[in-house]
Figure 1: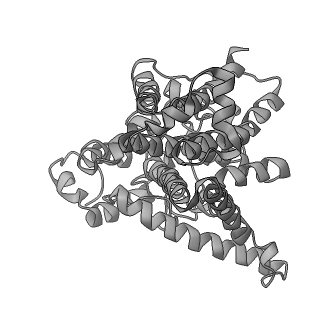
Figure 2: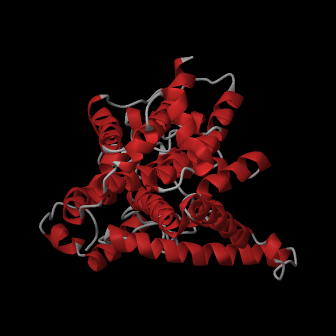
Amino acid sequence: MFHYLKFFTFHLIGFASVIAFLAGGMWISIGLAVILGIYILGDAFLGDDTSVPDYQFPKILTIQLWMALPLICLITFASVWSFSSEDVLGFGQWLTHMTGYDVLAAREQTSGLHHVSAVILTGLMIGVIGTITGHELTHRTWDTVSLLIGRWLMAFSFDTIFSIEHVYGHHRYVSTKEDPATAPRGRNVYFHVLASTIKGNISAWKIEMKRLKRKQQTKNPFANAFIRGHAMSVFLVLVAYWMGGIETMLYFIVCALWGKALLEIVNYMEHYGMVRNPQTPVQPRHSWNTNKRVSSWTMFNLTRHSHHHAQGEVPYQDLKPFPDAPMMISGYLTTIVIALIPPLWHKLMTPKVLEWDEKYASQEELILAHEANAKSGMKAFLDANRSRTVPR
């Protein structure tokens, strides 16, 4: 039973963020700090989860994923309501009457600093509740319900094209120059967010047009999943506008873009510096892995990324920990924070990437790695560590 319940940690964190938004004021910033602490300190002190349970009732775990859609709707509504000057549908009055806590007064007293915390927390929840769950569901191309829910989850970060580019592009070209989401050695994370977003959309458009061409439907916009997906995001923007006008709409857009940026930061972390010939199969060594307990439980084993890329169709509960795979710096949120500080990132990751060359790379990949090191600025570090076995 525990192995089913541990994945509900994800929902508890989502509800905690709702409470923070509605409590208003300093409680928003406190809620953000507590949630960040749960991830960063939890991963630091609670160790790894390498268990591989035998789940007899996998449908429960699928329904658990579906529950993310009403949860992200509630989270986003609470966040946007907390910023709006309107009491949409009389929600504030109703909640005050039900709880005795004056949420309207608390909202009025929320300062700009706490609204900044709200943006950070909302984007984080869009990433954790929306993107991570959407990632799992959009891989289930055989299940129309899961696919639809997954696309709506991705709509909150303006990234429904994920169901096209990630599934049919990224998984094919991961760790190669052809993959927009794979960050080459030496790249800055902030540049990667922009480059991967633009190139990912271009790639998704090309993939979708090829699909429509095979079906002879290239001129039918209703058949185009790229267009339909972005229309879903536009709908959410219009709902935000309805909730409070142009300022509230812009607030939601900033939250959504931050959620999208988090996805690209995670892409940056998961395959940074890895190389592969696109004609060779994807192996566990082509993804950075982590088995940190809190990240694994609250992110539906996204952390077991090495197995996920080796077998993308495997449901999250059946992913294996691969403790011998190349390992990230720490859990996901800790690694995100480090990635946002480029000098620290490169100081910590350059030795890990060069260790990957020595420990995991094939002979063909050693040549690709040598070329990448020469282009990336890692050559100076390499020259200072002559014991490396990478060819010069």
